[in-house]
Length: 236
Image (cartoon, rainbow, N blue to C red; front, side, top):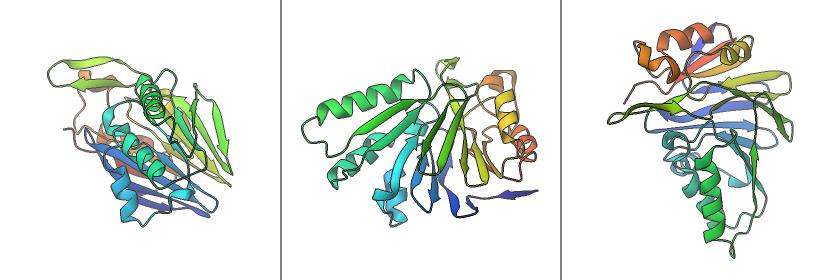
């Protein structure tokens, strides 16, 4: 059992946690021989990809875990850059069911630039345990428990949120998104080659039960996988 920092090398694929801080941004890049998938696109995603001298033609899909700004705040900028550089191949955008933030962003972007879009954004909502395949990458969504928290207004209502189990060849990784402790996350993490788990709070309170995992909880889940990375640490 081992804990990693921000990079994992599998068999003919790898995972880079480009950035992750609670209340700021999270963006995780999955790279295979054939193509790449980005999970979440927080603020600074474009900058992080440019820092990697990234080939944007490799990006075939973006999977958003939920609609909070720190997980999709960089989506408009990234899609705008792809339009500017003249990308022509379709881009798949995966999101949980009824994720209004993603739905409205795509609608607004494609309306504003309807006459000058060189590529198509194909939106796909994945319901609980539904699968989506692109090239040899298979992503399976699973529902997690999550609520927003705003300092002025406190804990918000439950929102549509997903984790993703992503398989390539004979290996599988799990990305939790933001979540409280829940059975689907435990089930999908068990036996995974890698689990990337948010661990936002140091000490868990009753208010946190459906908002975030604690470092202790995330570590306990991570130990059921072959390897794990703790992200999103540090409550804002």
